Amino acid sequence: MKKRMVNKLPQACLALLVCIVLALEMLPAPSFASESGGKWSYTVVAEPQFEDVRNFSEGLAAVRVDGKWGYIDASGEMVIEPQFVLASDFSGGIAAVTFDEPEEEYDVTRWGYGVQWIVIDQTGTQLASLENNGYTEQGMRVITGEVRFPVIRDGYLYRLQLAVFGGGMYYDVFDASDGSVVFPKQLDNGRWLVACGFGDGGAWPVRESGYYGDGEGLASFPDLFACGWADAGGNWLEHFEWSEGAESYISAARSFDGDLAAVWLATVNDEGYYTHSLGFMNRSCEWVIEPQFQYFSWSDWDGLGIAVVNADGNYGAIDSLGNTVLPFRYGRIDEESDGMLLFLEGEKHGYLDAETLQTAIPAQYGCAGRFTNGLAMVYAGDSIGYDYELETYVYDREKLQIIDKTGREIEAFAALDLSYYFDPYKDSPDFDLGECIVVCENGLYGFVKPVFVQTEAPSSWAAAEVAAAIEAGLVPKELQGAYRTPVSRGRVAQLFVNLIEQACGKSIDEFLAEKGAVVNEAAFTDTADRAVLAANALGIINGVGGGRFDPEGTLTRAQIAAIINRVAGVMGVDTAGYTHAFSDVSGHWVDAELGWPVHVGIVNGVGGGRFDPNGELTTEQAILITYRALAALKNAG
Image (cartoon, rainbow, N blue to C red; front, side):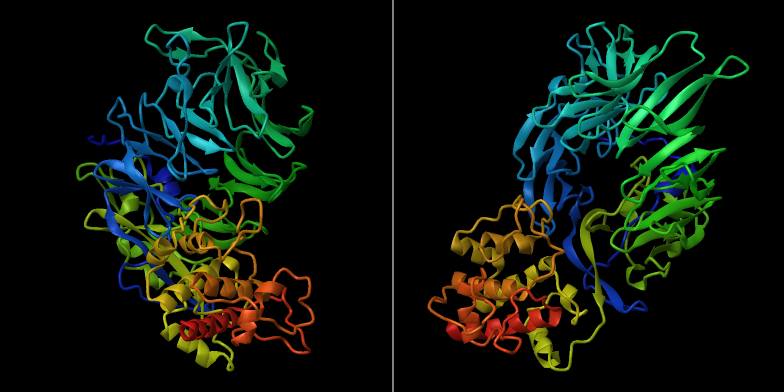
């Protein structure tokens, strides 16, 4: 399908979206020292080979091959074969896809008319089809406007409609479990409830409006009868009715964030026209913050404890009592990302510390993106332009920078080809960073993953074995630093996969096939790391319960001893019948798995006849234990 050029946003809006990528270079990957005690590097997830891509979400990225979309995982492996005409990001373990061609020639990475959306899980299994595809039983569009990718949130799909009636934008809402329409919903009185925001698990902000067909299968809602919040069955939870000639009425409400929701009050002014002001109500429909603001941007009452609102044409932040905590001088303040708030002041962008609300990086960039994983992309020039004749964005590549949270440019990323983010056929250079970064080569796209390695040296007693372990190919780049700090469960998974590969001389995929082990891509809800899933498939790494792996949890001495014992077992070593003499392990779950690792000298105690099974493990200790395990496994083989 031919892509249609869409209208370009004005420069002020381009500045909002133009950048946000971290960066990493293609093969071979260099490392650069950082003044903050480490160095940035990267690993290649997938070399440039795809016609188009979407960024990673929940461990999977949509990629296009021969005109069809499929999904790869964080190791670059194709886990859902290319077969879809359109494919969305994953959220909550599900994504929206379609096999239908859009009815209009819109940029297929963003738009689609009249397609049948299907809900899939991370294995590609089809769970549901969206009922009626957003049409009424009479065959008329409930809401007119272009169709975007559905937004997936808390088990529901929201399809934004661009028609404006009575002010605002509206959503078709579907239940992802069966594809049924939640909103719009026709009431017994013939009117309609239309959703004007996301639900919070049981309450949706809605408006009750009249329905008027235009004879062309389209609809509009020119009349407002009531607004408030309703449940999924269309039952009012709280609502405000409107009557003609009223001096004031509640004109709109938004989703609850915690116990507060933004609500608009319309009041007749001296000239007889309604003016709208914004305040905040609690769930009892009582004003907590009186109407006094113009616009609402976002709130995070339970986290940061603030809402960003507009007064007199500028944005600032208030607390839950309505007190100003950030002065009203900003053109925009974005939602928190990686502990930072991107803001626009005048014509320049900068960053606030989300916790202190103090300026972290002064306004100095013509364009800037949100921080992710400690990095953001910024444009040190005045603005990004667009040449309509050449159909290309115009900017100085040397002024395109990747910075850390101190505002320091990271030279490791200076040579990256980031042209993906400036694709002239996309409606705007919108590129929030995911788990990996998109890179371009010869018009094809791939992914790389940033890695920050602490430059802390190993302890003197560990230095020789750490160096030998690196030489043996055991230690992944992300573990080559911060040697004396506690190591997380997620970061050591690749260490154990490397142990298996070095001990058996086969790739992990070959070893899995040999053992008949099948990787469950949906084993955990909090990680899709290939090494974790492979180790889990072999039975050497388990979760912590509730479908979680807890990748950021600290690895303990008991856990690594058990993992090493299981690695030996899966490689055919008989580890049964070995004992130990530690006094603090009796009754502990690791007791039965500790004998062999102790017997062959892989793990030792901490003195006084104790093993300290729940003690934290540092990176260098994990490396040494794994290196000794490699020697033991080779001797056993």
